[in-house]
Amino acid sequence: MRGSKPKTIARARSLRQSDNDAEDKLWKELRDRRLNGNKFVRQMPIGPYFADFACRELRLVVEIDGSQHADSRRDGIRGNGWSVVRFWNVDVLSALPSVLDTIVAICDGRLVERVEAMDLRFFPAVRE
Image 1 (cartoon, rainbow, N blue to C red):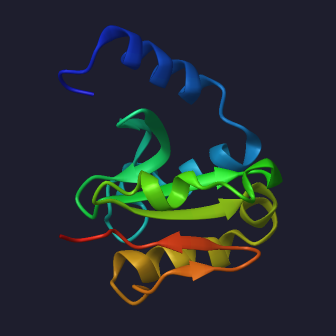
Image 2: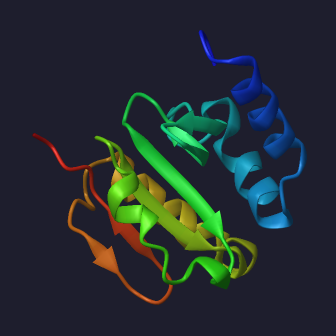
Image 3: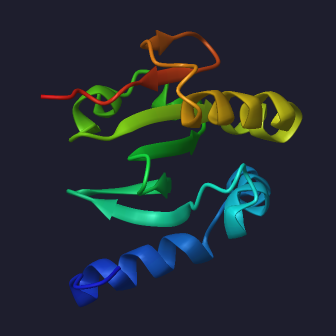
């Protein structure tokens, strides 16, 4: 959060303290470079949004949401050079190994095409 505005820092801290069960469960797997050595951070501001999890090196945002975001248009425009993958809370809680396998596939460059399925949305970064 180097160089960020105090309000942004306060908002990110507030979001980190109010993680839901799914975010908490996934964070335990992503923190401390536990997922194939990739460094993830929580509640990172990107433009006007806060990414649930982000890997700066790979420019990958991982979002964990409930069904209220099923028709979210933000995923596609949120990119700004970042790839965005969205999982549902229920999938993180009930099928964590599959979620982790998908994140690893993205990190390894094995999943590069856009995916819009019921249980997964992946928007690769738009490169100019």
